[in-house]
Image (tube, rainbow, N blue to C red; front, side, top):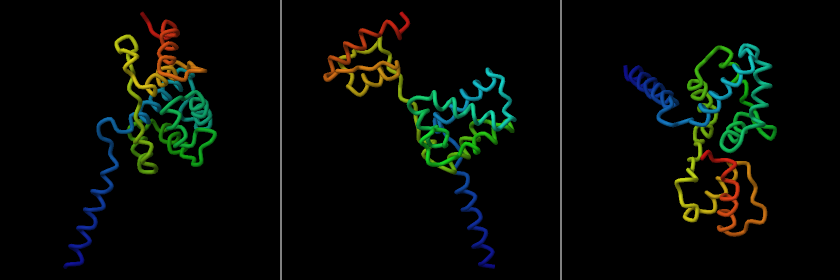
Length: 173
């Protein structure tokens, strides 16, 4: 009788531990965001998700274009050239069965929790903020998001000047 009770408790505990893999809040935002963009990309290019080999090739191409946190996501799933692991099949196969991206990300979280720890960097409204009050790291982030380089920038004022010089190219007035 005590053995049955112990087995029952173990079963309940295991079920509760398995339920912790569900996503909550803004968890896996990069995974969900990237896979939604990738899904739209497949539709735009008329690549059938059922063709797993073409879908995987397109995933590799999408990851070559990825920047920032999405590039890191690609590294984690093995779609980047320098990746050590290969989880691309864990993305491609469920997509071919039209599994929702949220569920795909839940499964990826079970394989590698780092995937769901990725968060997008907050966007900085260049027009609404005083650039002189930002940190150099945030100024570099602005330039990086615009694919601009600040060669020879050594001080904060150099970065602010560069942003003001190229702002008209990247910000709609």
